[in-house]
Length: 333
Ligand code: 2P0
Image (cartoon, rainbow, N blue to C red; front, side, top):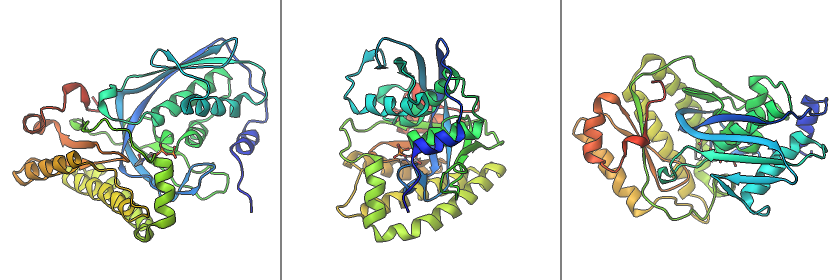
C-alpha cells in the first residue's frame, strides 16, 4: 500500500484555503533528547519507531519572520540563501504544503539564537518556529497537537520544539500520523543544567535522516532499540516525577550510548565520534568517579551535552572550562 503524503494529510486537516495576513513572527527553543528518536516507521511523514523525551533550551532556538515579497526568499542569520541550497528548498517546500497553490511569494527570515559555536543542530527549532509563523500568517487556527504533528513533518525532532521544559513525543499508531505529536510534561526541575561541549568543527558526512535509515536497514543491534527506548522513556518520566537526578542521568547516558552502539553496528559503519569525543567522555567519567553527579548525552555528531545540577556547576566548570556560561541553560529559571 502506498503511504499517505504530507500534502494529503494537510489537505484533510485543512479543507479551507489559507488566508494570508501581513506578517508573522515566532520563536521556538532548541531541544536535547534524553530518550532519543532514532529510526522511522514512515519516512515521508517522519513517523518514529519509538517515542522520545527531550528538554528544551529556554531562549536558545530560532526566531522566524514571514512576510509577502516579490519572489520567494529564504534568509538565515541575516544572509540571503541561494534558492537551490538544501535549507532553502526544505523551507520553501514546507511552506508550499500550507500555501497550497496560493500565488503569493514570501520572504522568510530565521535568526538562530543558538551560538554557532554550540554545535547544536537547528532543524528542530527552525521547523517549529516556521510552523508557528505559518499558522499565524495563513490564519490556520491549528490546535497545539496539530502544530506539533505538522512540525514533525518538517523534521521529526521539531515536534518537541514547540514547548518548554520536559517534552514527550508520542510515537502514535495511525497511518496519517496525526496521533504522533509531542506534549510538555507538567513537572519542572529548577537547578537542572545542560552544558554544550563543542569539540569539533568538521561537518558530518552522514546526516541524521540518512543515518537513521542506514541503521534501520543494516544494524542487527537495532532490533533491541525499540524495547530499550520504551523502557528508558518510562524510567525517565518516573525520575523526573521524583527529581531523582542519578536515575535520570544514568538512563539518559545509557540511552544515548545505546543509540550510538546501534549506529556503529550499521554497515557501512556509522561512527559520529572523534578522538576528542572519547577523551571528553573519559573526563566526564573521571569527574563522576570523584563524586560529582555529571552525565553525558550525544546526538548524531561528535559533540557532548553534559547534564548536571546547579550545585555542581563549579566542579563541572573547573574540569570543563570550555563550557562557557552562555552555553549552560537552566530551562526552568
Ligand atoms: C533526537 N536526533 O531525538 C535524535 C537523536 C539525532 C539523534 O532527532 O529526519 O533532524 O528531520 O526527522 O529530527 C535528529 O533528527 O531528523 C534527531 P528528521 P531530525 O534528538
